[in-house]
Image 1 (cartoon, helix red, strand yellow):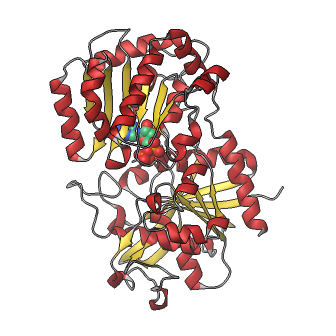
Image 2 (spheres, protein in one colour; image 1 turned 180 degrees about the horizontal axis):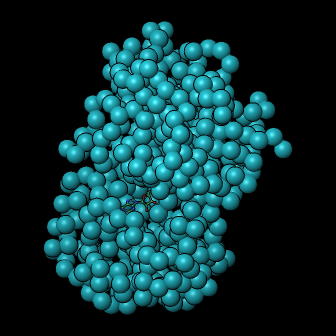
Image 3 (cartoon, rainbow, N blue to C red; image 1 turned 90 degrees about the vertical axis):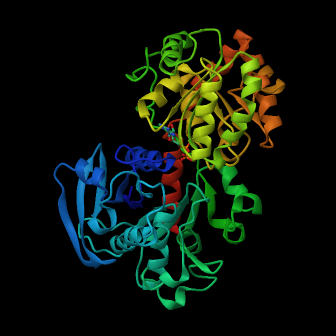
Length: 482
Ligand code: ADP
């Protein structure tokens, strides 16, 4: 079987730097693809944490002037990942979050920072490295969106390109005046080029010029062709529907394995959910909740943003409190939501516990100790927390959108009778539907036999990368054969 060489271009990768699901996917996919004879290497910006993780980096290329200063490309391997690290201190030598400064605002030169990443991705595609010439470039989100555009306007032989959309809400918009600074030719500023409502959009560029477009669930692949979820790109996606596919994400089942997880209070196997009790008690202690094995704990691990629908949770708190349930939340993001949850904690001591921040270990304990994991997103391309929940015996209560629709089987009468339910879905996404779903979930919780069955079904669900990796490998072969 011929080896397929894929360059994955991404702005974050687990375990080095992560703000969301993109990092999980970028980190897990190369490992899962190895057995499919796919050699996937990753191009990533040289943020300080990424450079620090490289033990014996080898300089493989240099750039005299990459968007304003010289830069070099380092190769190294970390955690089984083959990495090309773009060492460009003028663009990436900044602490903290990859996209925003300490004031929480986007770096003003983000268009240039990620255009540089894309430019180098395109160069690797055209063969600047002797050791690795990919036959496919997989571009993740807007940060890699200019790769297909550069290759298009450069002309000449080029690899196939795949634009993978993890979230259509982030579009990489830049002012039209930046065209020259972004190394795009004047001719590219047209509706069939990089132009997008009078601006430039990196994501639109990728969607326009990639050979294939993927997104991270079949339902989201359909939703984004409609105005409601299409965010201005639905027209283009409708035109390109024949090359648009949805492949679900998996989770790294070694990182997320309740049987070996050192970050939970006591490991448990998929056969015995009773092992979760210790983690529930530990979680209640950690978050200042009243210790009570009987009180249902509703867990949240999330970015706090409008997308995630957590304002609906704030609204539902009086009802949740009246039902005797507890809320355990870990998240960070929009100030208003952060303040809202901190105020709720003060108002309902012992019943609402919140940690504002980002904490991998606590995320594991939340999965192992919560009875329910809430994901009331207004839109959700795939969603990973509900997949982890299934694997950890926490019952996901999710909005019926995107990947949440594709990964959770609602405990309706038919699914319960057939014994296949894995969680609860609700829709449309609004406060009253959410509260109905909460009541329905809590009613199921009070019926231990049914509840255990739902948990067991979740634990049996395959949320690994096994199937998605096979689907990607098949897609790569298909793209190369075109
Ligand atoms: P998104 O990428 O939109 O943020 P996903 O559900 O696809 O949402 O992925 C989010 C990932 O980030 C999950 O692995 C989730 O556990 C993790 N996560 C989100 N917020 C936090 C947090 N505050 N602390 C730790 N992990 C978090």
